Length: 176
Image (cartoon, rainbow, N blue to C red; front, side):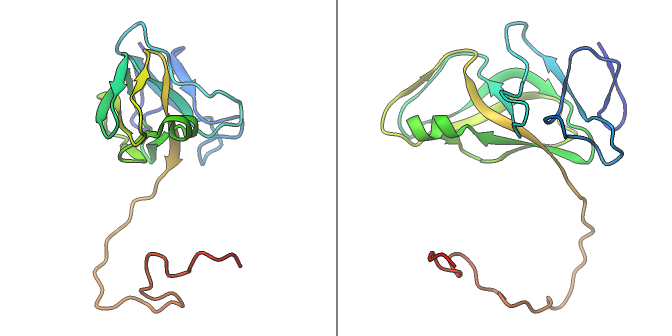
């Protein structure tokens, strides 16, 4: 077992996944590491399918069947220690969405730096047919992103912009 420092970075572990492709690093230039604990011996560690991929593939720990319109929390058998100042974002896999209508219901799911429980992926079947997944099937992608913390300041009015309060669809659909 490795030691995790207060920033969530691993000190000397061989069971960590280096986060991001070749260019991913922290603000100090050090390589970011993602401490991952297998809660079951039979589950795969998250991994990048290609060196330049943004997301680590997450796999189902158990078989799952989803009828049309059904949603369920799918266990991965993994716990992670997202470093302080970062967030883990769980995104859908585009191939599952295109082929089966399977997506992440709360996309993107959020894994905060302080969470140490098992990672689950909330899948929903928006397709017309039942979807069956085997244990080990890739079900989502985990992206690591730096986050800032804001100081909330109450004001009486906000500054003006060209857009103002124009909301959903205000820019139309036609190209420029």
